[in-house]
Image (tube, rainbow, N blue to C red):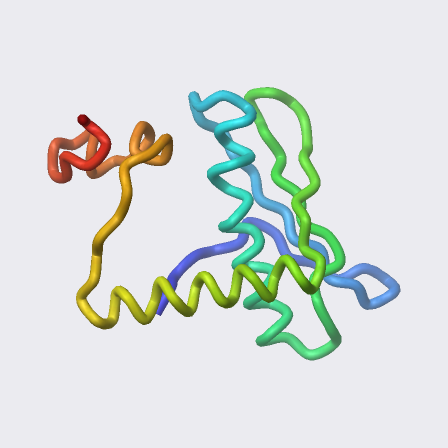
Length: 122
């Protein structure tokens, strides 16, 4: 099971769904967009799956520190790939495979900062 909470999901007068998430952190703009794009895309895929009336028409990350808004791709093909990647990840976790690769994501990881997981330190 994956758990998350979308900040705002609304349907406009024409019936289209829109997803919005606000982010305020010390990360640089590009890092925030890269890090949180998959989150919004997974939310959009879930909404398209769970809600009647069709897919999410738009998704945006509002970067509070920068005072700007960034559109996130939510086209059907993009969300199909997000669903496949999520399914692979959930199956791996279910099988007890928690292997990961160190990368930029490690810099902001609370497990690494807290000293509980050394991935990304070397």
